[in-house]
Image (cartoon, rainbow over all chains, first blue to last red):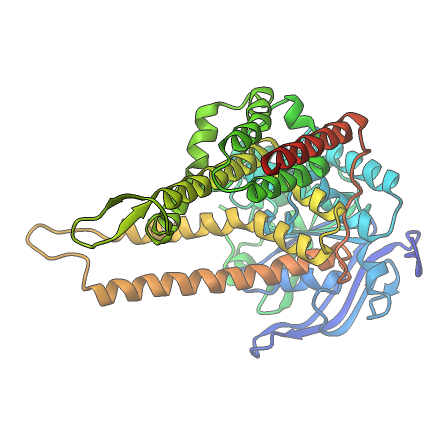
Length: 245
Length: 263
């Protein structure tokens, strides 16, 4: 890789300080967010719709640029190092149709490595490895529109795994999946070693997979702690429109 | 909700020699074929029969069902409408005249109409065989290696990818409208033409807005994976001697037919 190398030996994977962001129409989506993720940590991001979860995720690789500081692997995100730091954060969008924009699966999975300027052999190797990791080997020449939602979600994850990121930011990974596809996806997420920040409404997923939980509401973090403790705090959850049942 | 768009994928998977042939050869070969067909003199039927032979061979080798190809080639039918007036406008030996309108059809005119129909039908069949044996992604890659500008190739490939997504969205909108378009006995349902047009207009507008928002999300997804404004593509596969040989043979044959048709 060219330019700034992200130091993976740093124990802090993500450090967000005083992050504020308003959309062009004036809507304040983030009103001062502070969040630190240690390396290898698996963290759930809970909160009602409109709490600012997706907006926060879009800041982790600089798609959105608000006021405040975002540090990835010890490197502060700046316009001039955006492209390098971006490779460290794999952002998986909620709707795989937004993420899979190429005519074939292989071209989509190879997209990230190709833009990193890697030689063809390595691009293909990385794509093959990423597809194997999500159990979708053999789908290389398929068109995304011919795949089921569960398959599309797995390939969407493969498209960022091929970039070999240190951090995965997933937006509603299990939304509208059927039980089997959901189970397979959770199994896949459990196998991945990356630091993870998962925005979700899927409480069983949080309970099974993510030891730490951060609750957002109204553009700020309202709770941050052990998943068990947060999920058993009925008053906190009710106050922020969350349900554990 | 699962919806399947009734249009779209032209490719019919197969393992025939025509299917596996290099798209970088098939695409220009098809263009050369259409070029040759277009250049054939009007009314030279033996030449047109000779030109049909490569199509018959391609069809036989491809294992495609002739019925499917025939059905898809119906795309050429509208040309009839465009060509028919020629029958009456071209001067020549009178065949018959329309009783009331006073139009007279000429033999030369009829010949021109039939030539145009045959030529357009042959060209359409050639394209139908190409698209049925070549995945769209392969065609795009071929267009790219053959020198079509990158940006154009990237635009077409987005169009191809999102045609289905947007088509499904339109279908969902229409289903939502239809499931609320109920009828009570004794009441006139559906509203006036104006109000229906307004509903349709709103649907088109909402589809446009959704598409616009989607384009922003797609662009974010591209940026997240390093897009820098310059479309890049994976390299194509290696050239095979057999593909190139076939293409050269086809071009030689087409040139032969054209020479024969003229002298």
